Image 1 (cartoon, protein in one colour):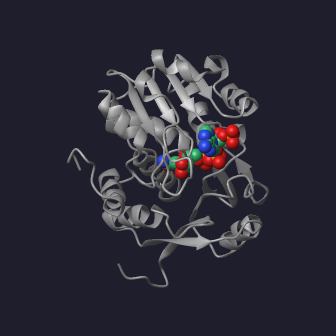
Image 2 (image 1 turned 30 degrees about the horizontal axis):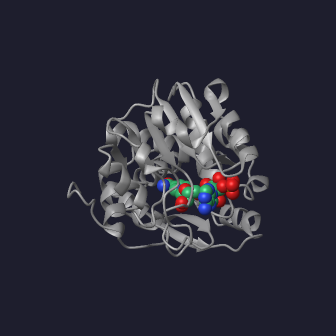
Image 3 (image 1 turned 135 degrees about the horizontal axis):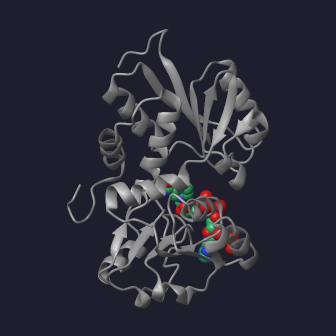
Length: 285
Ligand code: NAP
C-alpha cells in the first residue's frame, strides 16, 4: 500500500510493544478490504497513557488498541466506556462516536467468538474453570458469565484467593472461587496466567495434567510462544487444545469493526497472525 496525505491512522499503545502482532493483523485486514488505513505500534511509557490518548485524538488517529500497562490508565482520557469496559475497569480498544472517545474491552468476547467460530465450541451450559485473576482472566470470566455466552458455571482458580473472588464476581450468579481439582468435572479449562510463557521462570504447568481427559476443551491464552506445555498435555490427554491466537485475532476483529464500521476480514487476519508465529503442529494451518 502507499501511504498518502489521505491515509487514516490507527495504532496500539503499550510498553513493551515491539513484539506486538497487532500491526500485522490490522494492516492485513486493511489491505484485504482495500482500505486506505495504516496501523502502527506506539511505544508509550508507563505514566504517559493519558497524554498519548489525548495526543492521538488531537492527531485524528481513527482507532487505538491499548495493551499493557495502560488498560486502566487510559480511562480518565475517555468520554465514556461501554458496559463491559466499565465492569472490568479496563479498556483495550478506543473508538470515536461523533466527538466522543469511547473505551471498550473486546478481549473476553474475542475469546468467546474464537471458541464458537473457529473451534466449534459453544460455552453455553458449559462448566468452565479459569486459572488466573488478572486482566485477561477478568475479561474472560465476565464474557463467559454474560447471557450471550451463557456458561453454566465459571470457577476461578488463582494463587491469590482474594483476587479470585473479585474476578469470579464478574460472572454474576454463575461465578465462584474454584480449586485446582475442579478441572476433573470441567468442560472448558482456560489458562489466563503467564505460566508456560517464554521467559517466565515458572514455565511449567498451572494444573495437574493427570486430571485432563478427552472431551474437555483446554484453552491457552498465551501467545508467545504459541505452543505451550499445557497445550501439549491437553493433546496427550485427548482433549481439544486451543491456542491463544484465536482470542487475539477476534478481539482485533471487534476493534476493527468499531473503527471502520466494516465486517472484519477474519481469514486475512488469521493468515497474518499465523504468519508471525508459525503453523499449528498438527499441520492444520
Ligand atoms: P496479569 O494481569 O499480570 O495476571 C496474571 C495472573 O496470573 C494473576 O492472576 C497471577 O496470580 C497469575 N500468576 C502469575 N504468575 C503465576 C504463577 N507463577 N503461578 C500461578 N499463577 C500465576 O496478566 P494478564 O494480562 O491477565 O495476562 C495473563 C496471560 O494472558 C499472559 O500470558 C498474557 O500474555 C495472556 N493474554 C493473552 C491475550 C490473548 O489475546 N491471547 C490477551 C491478554 C492476555 P496472582 O493474582 O496471585 O498474582
